[in-house]
Length: 163
Image (tube, rainbow, N blue to C red):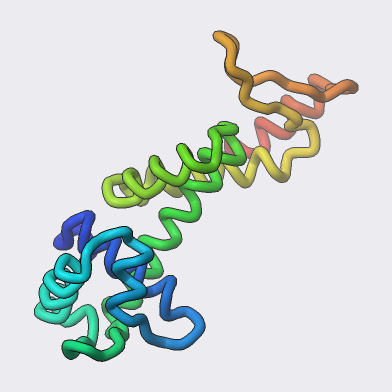
């Protein structure tokens, strides 16, 4: 099953189950409700729908575990969330709370090829020896803070990354 056949809410539940079950291998419905800040009845309905899609193993009043396909989708969603959160907070300098909110919203709709470019750009900003820019709240946007910026090295680095 592909994640695009799931609603954003169902993806959020899979991600929550995945994150909660990292240590113990399962998640309790009450913990899911607390993590997602929803009522227990909402969790029950979502768990039934995910069970129908064979993404979780669930029986009322027991712990929830991900099936292999559920785990694959949850890892994908969690990875998208982490990459977007990193990009928003570290590259764009957006405050953590706002970055978290937008990462959670966009993880459901961003195409993989665009996410890959964001990841590559974030990696470039961290690896480039001359990239000393930070986002500024000004019309100019990025501002390079490198004191001894060598334009020739920047051109060489940019050309190498275009290949």
